[in-house]
Image 1 (cartoon, rainbow, N blue to C red):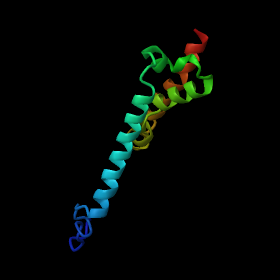
Image 2 (spheres, helix red, strand yellow):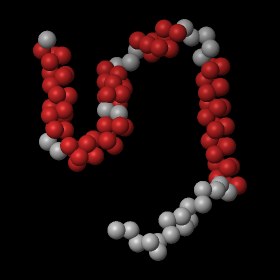
Image 3 (cartoon, rainbow, N blue to C red):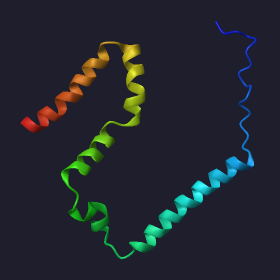
Length: 107
C-alpha cells in the first residue's frame, strides 16, 4: 500500500530553465545543420545510389541493420513483461522466431 504522506510531485515541476532551453535548441540546430550539409554535399547522387548504398556494403553492416530492425526496442522492453504475465507461452513464441530463419535456410 502506498504511503499517503509521500509527495510524488516534489522535484517534478516540469519546467525548463534557460540552460535546458539552450541545450535543446543547440541540439536541434546541430541536427538541422548536419542534415542541410549532407543534403547539399550529396545533391548530385541518384536515388538508386542512395537507397542501395552504391551496392558497396559488405555482409556485416547489412546483417546488423536487419538484426536491429528485427529485434526492435518493443521486443527488448516488452519481452520481459510478456514473459512475466504469460509465463511459458512466451517461450513458444520465441521458439517460433528461432525456427523461422532455420526454415528459410532449409527451404
